[in-house]
Length: 251
Ligand SMILES: C[S@@+](CC[C@H](N)C(=O)[O-])C[C@H]1O[C@@H](n2cnc3c(N)ncnc32)[C@H](O)[C@@H]1O
Image (cartoon, rainbow, N blue to C red; front, side, top):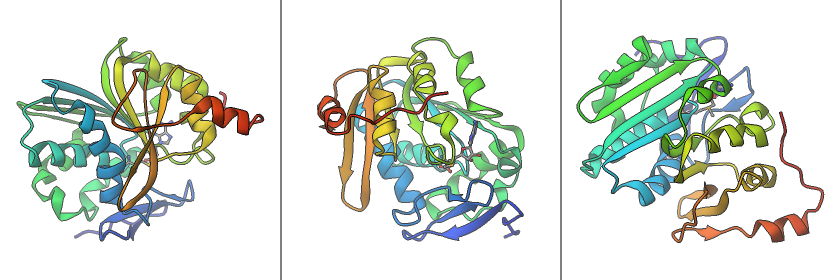
């Protein structure tokens, strides 16, 4: 395998045996090294989202942001493994064009072996399409990208930017307002962030906030404009009353 590391990215082994990367620019890993790159994608994003959405005939997903493509690939893996019949449409912005161009050199987990042709196509052309799957990677700013979609486009949003302190523009109240404007009323948003300001930015936009809890990973968040019975509800009124000075991030 050719060398993936360059002056901005370094491949790092995470605790589930899959590799992630470290960004020297953001001084952060692309995934939790403790939960593991593959497990994090599957358990904090794909499984909770598909728990609610897997019976749909067509599923449209906004993957914020593409990075190493784990969330997109873990979705394709889960869909195939469970022989789901739905058509998948995945749209994913990514600012770092050089990262996307270098993905054929990345050491992906064996679960993604059969999707190597998809990784190559996305890395080379930013586009892959077959009978049941349509994936687009947009090289540019997610904030601009999300403005081009119509109301009620998405069933699922994977909110997986770098942390709010390193990547604040993708965690503000105004950002989540733009997200709200392009999702369906019963869409589900998943994120690893359990920070109160993140949950508040969602709550201020009318989202109900829930905990995604399970074995083998640290708590994460799911949110929806509709009520979800499948997850533990977070009482945001109570949280705010206990933390009266909490503020959501703003543009
Ligand atoms: C935590 S990583 C995403 C990991 C990815 N979901 C995966 O599974 O590999 C965050 C990504 O957001 C990208 N990013 C940060 N700000 C962005 C922006 N404004 N627009 C698009 N991408 C952005 C970074 O370049 C980085 O690749």
